[in-house]
Image (tube, rainbow, N blue to C red; front, top):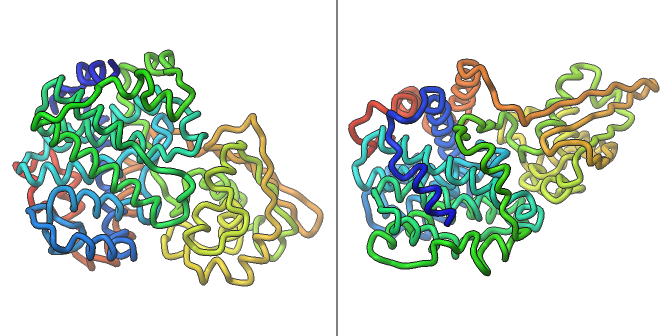
Length: 434
């Protein structure tokens, strides 16, 4: 069974087994997720969830508050907050956002267990490695069919991470895995609403619950991912992508995580960056029209033609192109407001943006043709699917992003939280780390 294969590879993983480069990227992922969760804690959906679970008792922290609650409630609330801005990391092997269904479950369970920083970091890496491999196995048809992979496969990363923290046996993990597979859910039809970030929190919380139930003897079919009438058969093409899986079996996939520096759907970023590279040439005053060439699959993810809200604008290639051209700061989540979207200048440029599909393009690629009112045109290509190799530069960019997201919420005292994450392996216990 796939569950057993994965547990045999990662179930006994120790901190010292993880390469230094993987540890660095893993901490960068946690820093990025924490920043997004702190910023997302001020969103209306976070207020609603905190109110709903106000009576839950426990020792686990709700991010950016002094509140304590149960491990399950904290995981759900913090998980949803971490994806509220849709600004968190992504991964092409998973086909979704890797940290947000895993990190909140790991933090809550580690806090309850008073686990060490090394235990937390190791469990987190286990979760990412497992979910990314399962993303490879299930293939792209699952996402194309309308399933939100961050949730449907992310739950399995969460269950693997928490199972590692709880030191489950291989048979217990198989039960936890099977139970989580049966709760795999999340539809792309809800993109652009509060329910998309809820998917992430729900996946994290259900993964945590599945591991805890399995520890107590709860049973399930460990082969329900790839077996008869399992997830693969019911919600994908029905064939495991074994060749792609084996080709990356010995790689540390955590290192291929991609980070978002624009506060919109990642698949809009190539178009944004291509337009930015054109510099002053691409401006609203001289814009006659814009042609964007993208993979056809993007139309089912970020193809909202005429978004009505700032949240919908995050999933609109046309809106992001227009916002970029008029000079709005797409790196700032506050840019994606209803007011900015409806500004006459944005709306005027939006009407000039034409989306063209090109099957030769990858999902993280875009070609932009900017047509000037003087009759000239300029072409620019960009690909955001290439992981960084300069980890020091990546850290600088992520620390800047952290400051920009966290300071407005927590005030001047952001350095302590940042250093707690970046030096998490030295913590004897992660309880009350923020």
